[in-house]
Length: 282
DNA sequence: CTGGGGAAGGGGCCC
DNA sequence: CGGGCCCCTTCCCCA
Image 1 (cartoon, rainbow, N blue to C red):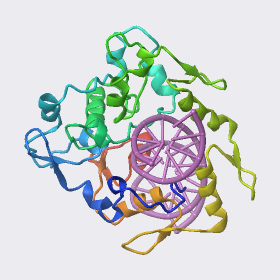
Image 2: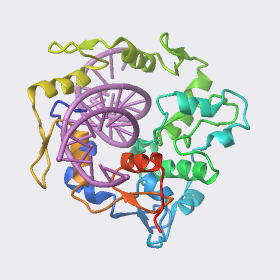
Image 3: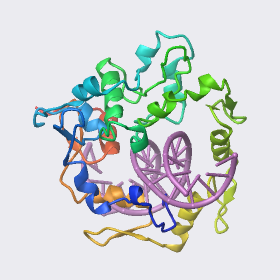
């Protein structure tokens, strides 16, 4: 479904280069601390390091070691040492359930210019290393004095910690339809729309939480497909689906089963493989 | 069982 | 503060 149904004149710092989508994660960035090349691997691949991975002058722990005053990531097992709601419960019940944290660090929140996904990798690795089940490796707030254990995106820790909004303001907005809590009224209002679904489709009556979700849905009626693959000219109604499609033009299979080492092109395929019971071959 | 497309959900960021 | 747009993720279905 289209996440961006309107063609926008992108500001310079947000122009997505879809022509590089399939290559940018395979090429190397550089570590701002040691100037060594750093693989821009996604979290799942990074957490499932393979023997064939080329040695990296600066792997993640090194980056963290000499770079970061950074986010405190706790898996739920670590966090259990702190009083407050069971972070695992938060992980399983919230919108994070079953998801890997994702949002890349924004430049403004990443003064060290670390590759966008590193903090996420750290959180995932630490959690997995401690034996947390996949999907429970959510990062939780564990600042001193903060017992909220709120999960946050990879990019969120810095933002979460900087003003540490919910500690300073001591305000908490709770959804009237569910028990979710938010640190701002705006965030709560945003969430509330997922219950009230104020955007009904005039064609079929299906309701959506946001206008652009509705617009994307309308495309399913009109057949409009404004996003075209530069490689095969196939068109998509959803930019995210185009992005997923672009991976099919790459041979890289970034998601590897730890049980049988079989690699998959999509995280969902790996998850399905694992859920169906990985049976390593002879 | 795997690969891939379609559709949708939801939080974060910018203006 | 709200709207628009971003991104990632998940689920479903079909080949």
